[in-house]
Image (cartoon, rainbow over the protein chains, first blue to last red):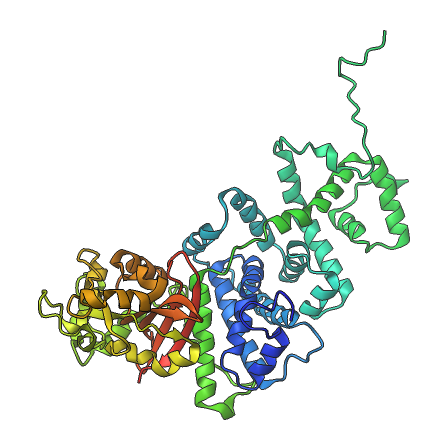
Length: 220
Length: 309
C-alpha cells in the first residue's frame, strides 16, 4: 500500500471500489473521504459558486456511487482519481452549460461569499476572487481545461482522459482560455507591483540591467 | 514584412506558447516578438498565468456542511440499495436527500428539521411546536427522545419535562458504522450506558438556561469518575457551551435544530461524540454525526443514517 492510501485502512482506491461493487457499505464513503477535498476544489473553481459546486459534487458522487455499485464504470485501466474527476468535472460542466443557457437565473451571491470567506485566507482572497471571477467568464470547455491543467497541474494527457477529448483539444482549449484572460492580465500588470518589475519576466535569457541614468560608473 | 510589424493576437500568442502553431507561423511569431516589447510583455503575462491560477486553486478542505451533506446523500443511496438490492444498477435514479427547497439549497443541511420535529413530536406535543418559527422558546420541545428513562428521574432538581431534554450518555463504546446502524437508536432512551448529563434542548434554543447540567441523580459523585473515563476525552462536550457550539456548527446555527441524544464515547479507538438528530424528511430514521471532541473546530468523523427502531 502506498502512503497516500494508508489513511484509515490499508486498501487501495481500486480495492475500495471493488469492495463497493461487492456490496461493502462503507467502502465508497471511505473512497470519497480520501478524495473529496480535491474534488470539491475542482468543482468550486469550475463553477465558481459553493452552492453550485456542492450540488454538482453531490450529483456526481451519487452517480459514481451507482456506477461503482453496478461495477460497470471503472474499468481498472485508469486511476480511480481520474475516474472520479471525470464524473465530477462532467457534472460541473453540464451544470455550467445549463446555467449559461439560463442567464436570467441569478445565483445567491450572499451565501456564496459567506462560504468562500471561511476558507480563503484574507491575503489570497482578492487574487482568488479575481481569478475565479475571470474564469467564470470563459466558455465552459475552456474553463474545465484551464482548471485542471493550469490550476491543479494535471498533465494534458491526464486532463484529456478526464475531459474525454484528444490531447490536442485540451491544449487548444487551454490556449484559447488563456488568450481570453489576457486583458485581465494586462490590467493586473498595469497596477504597480512593487516587488515584481515587469521587465523581469519579459525574456528568458540573462538580462543585464541597463541603467543609463545611474550616476555611478562614470569613468575618469 | 507585415509579419514582423503587426502585433500578434492573443490567440496567436497563446497558441505559440502552447506549441500549436505550424513551423511557419511559429517562426513568424518569434521574429515579431524579437522586435516587439508589447507582444513580449503579453507573452510573459500568458506565461505567468498558470502560476496565478495555481495560486488561486487552494479552496481549503471541503466545508464541513458540504461534507456532511455528501455523507447523507451517500448514506441514503446505500440505504436504498440495502432496501432494494436488485435495483442497484447504474440506470436507477436516486432521489437526492436534499431536494431543492427554494433559493437556498442544501447547504443548510438540516434546514427542514423543524418540520421533522413536528412529525416526530406529533404524539407528544403536536401543534405546540408550530409556534417555534418566531419564538425560540418552544421550538424543540418535542422529539420523542424519551429522555426520562435515561435521566433516572432526577427528583431533586426542577425537573425539565422529558420532551425538552436529550440524554447525554457516556456509553464508553468504541463506535463503528455497523454498531451505529444497529444500536444508535438506543441512545435515545439513554439505556446505552448511564446518563452522564442532560442536554436541555429547550434551553439550547433560547441559549439562556443551563444547557447540560450533570444530573446528580443519574451520575452521583461516586460514579462520576467512571463516567468521565467512559466518555474519554469527549467529556469536554458535556459542557453546555461547548456542546451548543458543536451543535450550532452541525446545524449551521439553526437553533431550532437540536439533537435528541448525545453519546460521549469513542470512534475507531479515539474519543468522539455521537450526536443523534432526527432525519430531515424521514421519521423512520435518524441522522448520526460523529465528531471529534474539539468540535466545532475539530474533525467531522462520520455520518450514518440509521433506522429509528
